[in-house]
Length: 286
Image: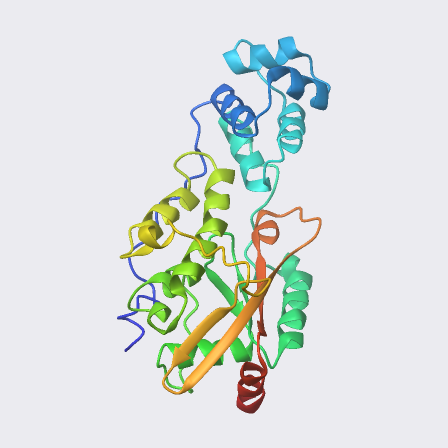
C-alpha cells in the first residue's frame, strides 16, 4: 500500500496556530490554578505573592508584570509554551523562542540528537515533537518503518506531515501488524492525553486527541487496559508481518534544562528488543 493511502505524506492544511487559548490573563490564571489543584492561599505561599494580589489578578482588578507571569508559570509548573501563552494573554511578547531544529543556534542540539540516534543502531530510534510528529530517525528506524509501510528500500522516508501516533493507530497503517494493538493504543493515548491536559482549551494537543479517539476501534480499546500481573514489567509492542515476529519496548528521553520551546518539546524514542529473536533480526538487517 502506497504512502499516500496511508496518509503519511502531507495531507490537509495544518490548522492555524493556536497560540492564544485565553481571552485575557485573569482567565488563564484561574484555569491553570484550578488545573493544578492550587488554592489561592497555596499559590500565594509558594509564589511569595500576596493572596489579595492573586485575587485581584484573577478578577482583573490588577494587571501583572512580565516577571510576575513568569514566576507564576514556574510555580504552576507550566511548560515553556504555556508560559508564553500566559504572556500573550496579558499583552506581552513571548519570553521563550520557538526555533526550527535547522536554525544555526540549535546546531549543537542537532549534533547531540544525531549522536544519540547513531548510538542506538542497530536498533531503531526516532525524534518526535510533543504531538508525536516525526522529526528525525536513525537508519534502523527508517528501515523498520519502510518495511511496515511496504515502501521501497531506495525511497526516502517522508517526514513532513508524518504523525507517528496516527500512523500506528490508523487501521490502514501499522496497526494491522500490531498483535496487541489495543494495549499499545491505551498506552499511546496516555502520552497525548497528558499533553492535552498540560495545554489550555482549544490547543493542538486537544484536537489531536479528538482525531485519534475518532479512529475506528480506538475509543473501545481504551476502556479495558491490560492489567495482567504476569506480564513483562513493561509493555512490549508485538509486531507480526508475514513470517516475522518482533517484540520491542521503548524508552523516552527529553532534553535537559531547555530554554527554547522546540528543544523543550523534543522526545527521543529508543526501541530495544524484548527477546533474542528480535535482536537477531535487527542485527541481520544492519
